[in-house]
Image (cartoon, rainbow, N blue to C red):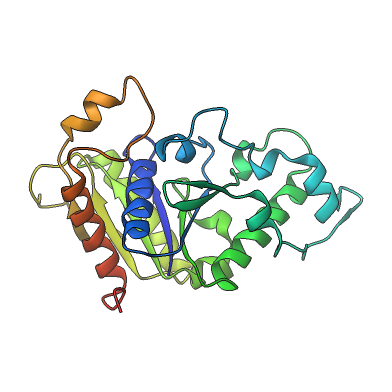
Length: 251
C-alpha cells in the first residue's frame, strides 16, 4: 500500500507520518518512508540525530548529473531502480529516503533535479511492493499526475481551524482532480469529534487526537515523536486512517 500525507505546515503532518510508519512497522509490514517536504524533518521525528540524517537527494548535484544530465541534455527517464537501497537509512524498524522537494532545491538545474525526484517517486509508488508513506508538502501536484493516481490513498492532516481546514480542502480538491479520490482527514490537537464547516473538497474525517502531554513535554528537548506514553491512542488513530483508505489492509 502506498500512502501520501499532506497538510498545512505546523499541523503535525510529519509527526503523523512518523506515527503511521512506526505503527505499520510494528504490525510486521515492510515499511519505506519518503521525506519529500522542504522542511526535511521526518528523520528527526523518527529519532535520527542531525548527523545521522542523510543529505537530501535534491541536493546531490553529482547524482543528478549522473542520472539526468544537465541543462544541455536532460534524460526524462533516468535509471532509479538501484537508488532506494543505495540511499535509504534504517531507523525504527523501517527504511527512510530523504528526497526533499523541488521548492527547496536552491540553485542549479531545477528541471534535472525535478526529473530525478519524479522518476524515483514513480518507481517507489508503481514498481515496488513495500508499504510506502510519502511525507509531502501541502500540495500533491509535484508528485505528477500518473504517480498521484497510483497512490492507494491520501491522508490530509489538519487542525480544527478555518485556515488549516481551508488548506486541507484545497489539497483534497487538487488530489481529486488528479484522480486520487481515496482520502481521509486526520484532525490533530482536537478534543472529541467536532462538527466541521462545509468546505468543498474537505476529505471525510476519520480520526482525531487531542493534544498529547507526552509530546508537549518532549518537544523542547528532542525531535523524536515515537515511544510516547499516548502510543495506544496514536495507534488507534493510525488504524482508523488506514482502514478508511483500505478496509482490507490487514489481510
